[in-house]
Image (cartoon, rainbow, N blue to C red; front, top):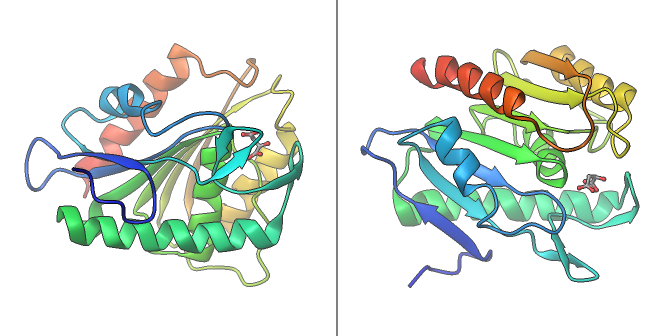
Length: 210
Ligand code: MLT
């Protein structure tokens, strides 16, 4: 039986003990199952840790509350981010994966909680792939993200995430020292095969160095 650890989740062990681990964070209305095929495609052989967001928005699972589309409940966001970080620590202990080889892959709401985790818990994630992400909050203190690789895939025609908001996120992370690779495409909120291919190539380069 899957242990609870505070979140409904899936854990799939990696091909080898030394394999990296992907923390998969789904979008609004998703589940712990959603991104597993994507994770397996992005990093074949990696272990997978995939929690389900604990906030329900009229039945749609999310990782934190929002007051309106793109307007976040910052108190809840911070609380949920710490909760997620605790879950990751507990899961590392339970399943025995190497925390220093943990990278996040988040889509939309999942990308936003990944962004929040990067800012509030620098060092927890080694790298991150943020698909359709925006600024979770403006940090009061700039974290030290020296050398952290972050891939951001953004759509110029995304109607949920204003392009200048994604650009601001990239700037915040860059100012904190992260190595941000921000890729723009003439697409909307849905992911495209081309972007998955780009993320896969980028991730392969990053994971090779771990
Ligand atoms: C969010 O609430 O995190 C963003 O608006 C994206 C989404 O709806 O998932």
